[in-house]
Length: 486
Image (cartoon, rainbow, N blue to C red; front, side, top):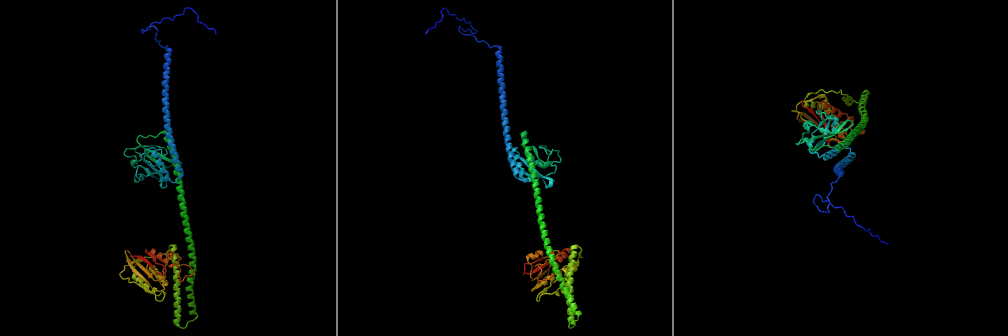
């Protein structure tokens, strides 16, 4: 292969180095300063780098702030979701306010807080729940309605800070010894303030913008829940009222049916009771008119039986008329001082003449030393004769006793018999119209069932009482009346 040799001839020598300002020898060269254009470009680049660093730092701070806001917002959304789920699941106002108060008090780290709701038919705001205070302390903070702060102008449907004079002494415990600022959160629905919460905020606490949005959401949810609870409670009260009215109507209907049945029994019994003495009167009178008697003594006996039947018939008619007067309010009594011993002396021969089973004794008390009583003598005599007639009628053996007792301000008279007694069921209906103790058409004992009803009304009109005591069937009974001392 051919080779190429360098050209021959003298080689050029490099130019000599000039000594630099530092006095360096040959072979060293001095540094040259950069041109002005290069210096300007470097300063601008450095300024841009510093600006970029500041922007980066600012961006990082904004990112950290946004992350903090996002974290707080996420926490608030979680709280709102939790509260919303609870509010949606309950229809009780007490649970609603308890949940809302806990959420707000914990979120703002409030040392004290109280929530009120509209109660008492819309006439006032009643504290329903409190935090940081004892129940006696917050339960005494009742406020008027519709404006709970009549002395302070407020926009009641807007969350706001309350000035120190607002609430007066009512909010003194709520502000606490440190004089905490109070924040008012209303629950308004359809221009009706359903309730509100007052938060005692920490002195260094402020309400941020995103917190206002969360509070607004919570306000709407709480107001709707309280309104729904109010409607639910109102509907429940109406339902309960309808149930009570239904039960009352059923009771009235049962009473009307029973009264109708008793009235039918009364008509049947009255017809029989009236017919019996009337038949006796007509029969004995016809016998006397036809001369069907052997001698004057037998005729006198027939006339006596006719007279007795007439008296019985008159008594039945008087009972019916007295009952009609009682129901129409036309029955009158005229009370006057009456000596009970004298009245018993007048009643005794009449009661002794009443028919009774053989061997039944009629025992009378000693009324000496007793004071006068304030009664209508004729009406009290009517009551006593009725009680004695019943006792003798329902006593087959033993005795019927009249017992007197003196009590403070009154005299008690008891008719005690050893007769058939009265069952507890019979005692409950004994003083009802047209009712007798054993009921039914086929009864061994006669009567219309009006006597004790009339006696009860008469004793009540004379300022006294009447009641029955019996240990049951076969154990006799005691009818007791009381009369005021004159």
